[in-house]
Length: 239
Image 1 (cartoon, rainbow, N blue to C red):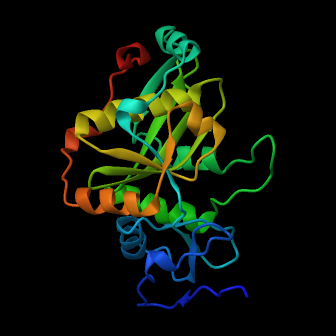
Image 2 (spheres, rainbow, N blue to C red; image 1 turned 90 degrees about the vertical axis):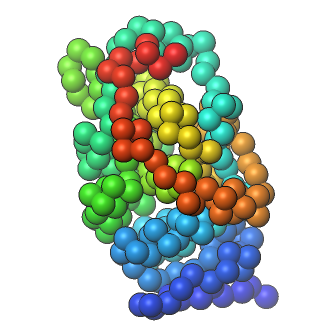
Image 3 (cartoon, one colour; image 1 turned 135 degrees about the vertical axis):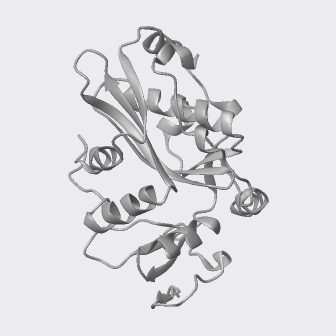
């Protein structure tokens, strides 16, 4: 017999994460809203939204959890060459909404996107409040946005949301830049949510949800210095 997930109304708290479904993996609740208060409450518990408008928000906490520990980032030879060629320049929080829209654009293998207008507005507000951050990768010759990523920084964890690439290796360069930042800031890990071969090739691996939640609890009181969110201007300096 299939179990039903709770529907959240205004003021409702998230249910315990142990009640998340196994199929689909990690589905915990539906409903609620994308207010900063609810989003931050969710992230502090390892819960994130993932849904397609116009359906109501769906909230997830998968088991296992895909994470990337900063010291386990794998930089391939080809990626090292791309960084040394200086074909890209870098930015932090200079084009947050453009990065989100880049992530929302249809992919080569699908026209679907889960980043709709509600998501865009919600995370732009988190960015305005200083919680959400973006890494931008620009073409060095044209200054056009070639790729990037965005996510939410809380305590000692960066919750990665999405990345995109319009040029070969651009999203990988963004990830290398992110690791550079979080190492300097003392962050403990990057939450990748659900693993895939692309993330695994960069060093991400699965850990048990209880392990992830324990690490989450241990790092929520960490404070990050404001100047953490800056980067060298050239990619070669990341190596």
